[in-house]
Image (tube, rainbow, N blue to C red):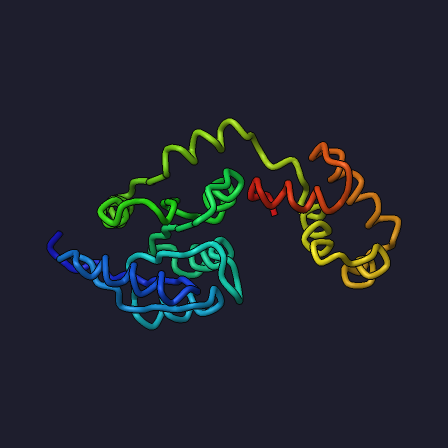
Length: 204
């Protein structure tokens, strides 16, 4: 390409972030112009450095990569979004696409594949790890409603129904109903198993 592609790298693990930056720095047409370790720093850095592409890890403090992608997509729709994940969870792929992501790749993909994905999204292509795409199709849609996901996320720390009701501004009966429905949909025995199952599928 005739001009350098300006990339923002968002990854909370400094060793991984620096390794990715070094690998991408070997590409003649790609320059990592900004690095952040928190999801809530992504939008500001993207604006400040006028980036073309944002590489976003899913698991970050401040905001997840998927939340950061949604904000970027709303505020700076011209920025291309590449989600990177250690976790090959099909539910994450669906969430990423809904947030406006242009590419979804696992971190153990070869560096050349990542660089090529950056170039391809700038031409308007969508780039998705084929194994994840197949798994997402096989898994189907997330059966949990937003409210059920919210209650399960809040329940992950072992809070009682009373504590959940207070923090979510719901009645205890409503909390109990959401948890019961989620447990039934996930075909598990209790809330701890429901949280674990939903997380493994990337549905939380």
